[in-house]
Every structure is written in structure tokens, then in C-alpha cells.
Length: 167
Image (cartoon, rainbow, N blue to C red):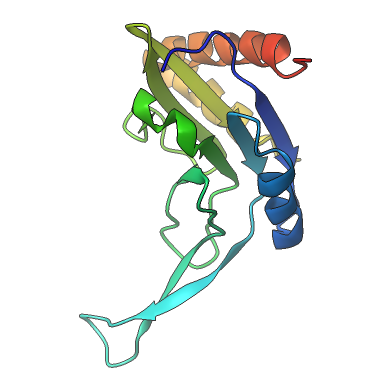
């Protein structure tokens, strides 16, 4: 499958499962959905190797027609604030999550291939403390990775502005 335009929708859902379920159903014809502040909930209790008590498996709501990309939380209160849903019909593009490049709870970086070209998608949550912006500033000062991240961010913004308002 080769496509010319992506239909992307982006929404801050304020940790509301009803909103995310509605978005996944109503925007089923879209290709990609960026979510900010997804709701984390208990999926299941799993046996623990370290304790007699079972451990909680937490996650973001799932849907059979969407692939989910989100960073797993490392502690109970440190959940990621961004998620990306990829329509299952695009699974042949082999989307890849790049926590190795940017590992931050407010930034999600994903790549995919189309017509032999690699494309990048970035979902960024901007809170009142400017956590993601400060992280980008740190990357700029401390590493050369920011150049890559900045170029990806610019491409993402340009792509979003060109694709989100498709007829």
C-alpha cells in the first residue's frame, strides 16, 4: 500500500476514556491520532516474581482497529502524557517507536517507511511547566541529538499543518 496524504487528528483528552473511545470510533477514517494526556487504567493483575502480592498492569485503552504507541510508565505516578494511535490498515508501513532517540514522557517519536523513504512523526505535550521544551533545550545544549529532533519537529509541524485539514 502506498499513500499520498495522511489524515492526522490531534486532541488533548484530559484523561477521559469516553473521549478517547469516541475519537477512535468517530475518526476511524483517519490514519493517525495523536493523543495528549491519555487515561491510564488497570488492565489486569499479573503475578510478581518479587512479591506474594500481584502487580498491577497499567495501560492505555485499546481498540481493535488501532495500533498503540506509548511509553510504558516506570512508576505508578509517572505515566506518559502522549500516545499515538495508528490505523491498523497502515500496519504494512512498519511503524517504529524511537525511545532510543528521545526518551521523555511528553514526547513520542515514531518512524515509518513509504515508497522507500523514512518519515517521522512526533507527538509533543506542552504543559504549564514547559517540560518538553526544557528537554529540547537540554538536548540542544548537551547533545547533538537535538538537531535531529528539531528537524523532525519542524517536519512534523509542516506535515500536520498540510494534512490535518484534508477535505
